[in-house]
Length: 569
Image (tube, rainbow, N blue to C red; front, side, top):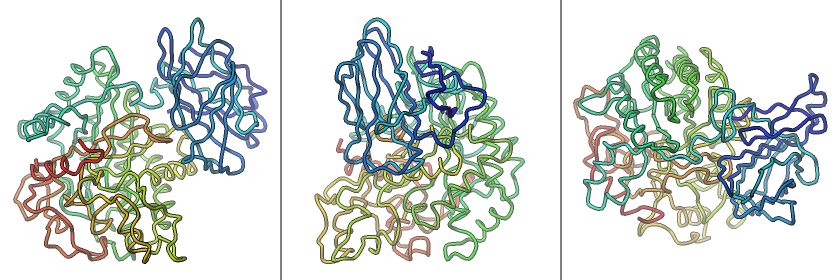
């Protein structure tokens, strides 16, 4: 991710860097740093003979704004031809990018991103000055490095930008074998390294090297992203049983030497240096330490143990440090989802804990490319029929049973807000978010077409919400779910990509106890007859029947996901 050297623009000598990033000569004593009102990070992500693509991130260090406009001028004949996440206009060489209706709010310390395509001929000189609402901004220097806007390791700002994403041939074959499955069998999905045996290939499946070799074959002459889920912490998933891991709570050394070290050794092989390797680090771990420990009704003895021994924090820090040392690896740390972290008493505490983990065991915030939300979950991407600010007969929707005092109603608003919170506690301003949209489409005949009745906040929210789960805490093989947005890069402000990190059709857990040697227990939340626990407010589980072990193919679920896809297939 880009690192920003703060220095007043008036004290800078600006040069055109080969990477397409404004490069600044910084004075030895950059006085007045605290007074810098804004920073603009302008990156040419792709350039060809007649055109180029730019990503712009603006960070506001002044008073909070409800609308904004960024202006700059070109020295040549550059002409903006199309844009996204901003209203972009041009008069001669002068360009103005103003907010859209949905991203006008820009908090103090907050950032907003937009992009555009443009044409040119001759030399594509970089702009040398930017203003935010008429005030001159500092220019992010990108801190050197190669194309696409990069840091000293050579990493680009968004690994998904301008790249294909690896299609797992094992998942693709299963999907294609299903009736109608060929419609999505070419979509990229995550490769799960969820036990030590998965590194070399368990039960005849492809190992890590086999996947990386296949990715090289798919790559061709362009850029290729490979998505890995690194998921084998000691005492894993302390608040559930379906995805309990193979390592006991105290086996941190085994985690380091037999799981992370071998993965790092393979990823560091120069053979794979041309791949962009995205790692999703240890889903469902750190958030459990915030929400399921101590005196909370949702606490479990297992989570209390992992909080006390520190092995989640140590394990995550070690993984970030080892994998972050590899120049073409991009670490994305799991950040739960809005129905877990979106409450006031979880939101800030989670960001603080993530910073603790990201600065332990030799890791630094520079080892974190971003965060991922909704991994293997079902939270709707965008609820269009209501907002958190709505009231019904004078009562806030936050008081509805579904929202239950949460600050967020969907993943997109949560991910964007949580990104700002993470930056505020010390993560780099260039971090991006991923949102897993593999199963959060909620289409089909049950999808509401408008707001609910205004009889009460409950009728209003329940009648209009796309997410049809019984409770937002339900997570296992949910009945009625559908495929969500297809994987895509840079879909919204602050979002690096929508991804299918959880491969659709792979079970979350078995509906009944099944003996196995994979370290996977039976969690009643996967039993459709289960009446719940404090973590789902004692509601029915909403799970599908006849499900196999987690990670195993679940044909009935796959068919349901296609039927209820939104956007439709």
